[in-house]
Length: 176
Figure 1 (cartoon, rainbow, N blue to C red):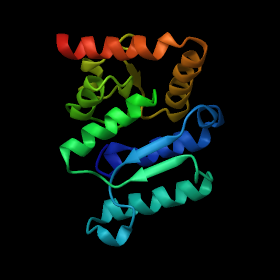
Figure 2: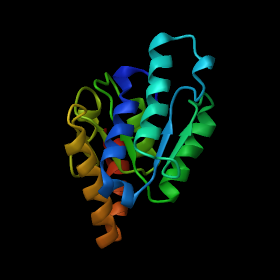
Figure 3: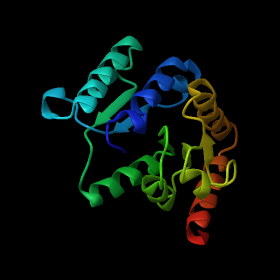
Figure 4: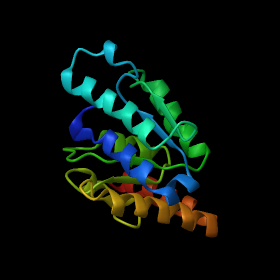
């Protein structure tokens, strides 16, 4: 859940997902960002990122494995989106090149979502890596996507793994 601009690295996440066959075999990708139609934006950077998203979806043949939802401004709808992902035992990924604070990280963890977030900025202080969530390197998509795939593989092997990280994330938010 982010603006569709370069620093938020949503197209980077989409490319990581597209390249990682193991991850694609484990989960689908839901992106909540920007507009689907570039003509709806007046921002040149966002228009370029929208076009890049479409290009990546085509390049990696992601139809059927990705759901792209336009950015939401209704906080109740956002909360419901987090809960829907949690209900299906998904995870939240915040791949920003840099994030000063990380409100979406707090929101996702507060909804019980295991969270993967950039190691560049505020989220690195919120998450205890490997305990209450996971740090990812936005400049190393292979390593980051493999870390996500490892988590979901472990969840298949140990049904309590998802719940363990979910609860640890909730505890971290209440302690923080």
